[in-house]
Length: 529
Image 1 (cartoon, one colour):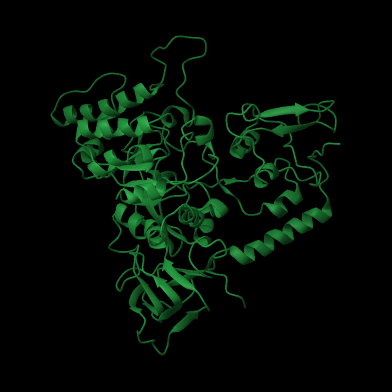
Image 2 (cartoon, one colour):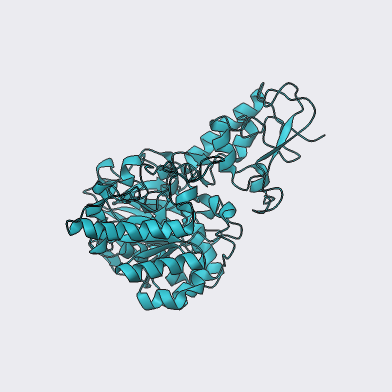
C-alpha cells in the first residue's frame, strides 16, 4: 500500500524525537553571541593561513585586536593576554563573501524524494504538473476519506510550499516508502522535521520588488530585507560573513542592492545601504512575481503590463536610459512606458558610472543582448549568473566585464529549471572564465548547506579550478567587485577581522567551518567542550 500522510493525530513519540533533533542541531550550529573583549587580543593559529590573494602562510598566526587584524605571519609575537584559538591541522581563510545572495525569511524544505536524489527532471512529464491526486475518496485535503494522497511533481518544492501557504494546494505530499505516515512536510509531520531540520535553501518564487513600474532604481532592496531573518544565521554558520543582496529580478531595471554582514553588532551589519542597480536580460523580469501576462482571453490594451517578451525587455532597458538623458537635457518625458521621474537621477548616475550596474543574463543570446546594449549606451556592468558565459568568453574579456558566476549545479534548482534558461549549463564554466582571464566571483544565490557557497567552491575545485583561485573567488574577488576590498576580503594587517577556521583544507568534502570570527568576535564556535 502506498504510504500517505495525515494532517491529524501526529505520533507523540515522533514529536518528542523531532523536538530533540531540533534542539541538538540548534546547539551544534546556532551562531553564538559575539564572544571576546574588543580590547583583548584574539589569536588564531593554523597549519595553513590562506590570505585570500593567492598567498599562504604555513604554521602562522593571526593577531586580532579591536576588531581588526593587527598582525599575520609565521613569526608574529603573541600577546600575553591573548585568547588563543588553535586546532590541530586547521586551515584559515577570510570570511566568505557572496556577491549575489538571495536572502529571504522563508525556508525551502526539500521533499524526501528530492533529498534522496529522485526528483523528476525539469520539463519531464512528471515535472509538468504540480500535483496528481490518487486514491479513492477525497479527504480533508481534497474531500472525505483517509487514503487520498498526491505525488508532488514540481522540481521546486517552493512551488508546493507557497501554494500550500496561500491555499492554492490542498493535497498531501507523496512520501517515499519507509517513511512514517505523519511525515508529510505540508502536514507538519514530526519525522520529516527530524530529517530536514536544516533547510536546503530559501524560497525565491515570491517577488519583493516594487511592481508599480519596470524601472525602479530609486527604490532600495534594504527596505524589504528582514535583518533578523534566520537565513542570516544560517549563512553565518556556513562561513558566509558578507553578502550583496539586490532587488529580485521582477523588474527590468530593479532596485539598488545592499551590502550586509551576516553577523556582528547590529549597528555594523549594514556595510553599504545602497549599492549596485540590478537589471535583467531574459524571462525573469516578466515571469517573476505576478508575471506580465496578457489579459485573459483579451487583446493587449492599456491595462497590459509590459514587457512580455525578450524584445520588450531590451526595449524597456534601452528606452529608460534614453529617457533619462532627455530628462537631464530638460526635455519632457511622456508615454506609458516612461520610467518614473524619481528613477531619473539614478539612471543618470548609472550612465555616468557613479552607480554600479549589474545585469543578470543566463543564456548566450541574453548575454550578447546585454553586451550590445552596454556598447550602445556606453555602460559598464558586472554580469550575474552567466550560465552560458562559456560561449561569450572573448566578448566578455575584450570588454573587461567581470562575472559573478553561479550557482553550479547538475539539475537546475528553482525557477531556472522551468524557465528553460539553464539548459546549456556546464560544470566547467567557472574554470573556463578563469582560464580566459575574466575576473570571476562565485555565488550560491539562494542555495544553502550542501549547495551553499562553500560547496560551490568545492564543486569548482572538482571541475578543475586551483584552490588558490577558488579561495580568491569567494573572498578577495567579490570584495573588489563590491568595492569593499579596502576593508575586507583578505587577511592583512589593518583589515577587518572576518576569518574562518576550517577543520581541514577549505572546501574539502570532509571539512567544515569550526570557528567563524566576524569583526574580531567569535560568532560561531563548534569546538568540542
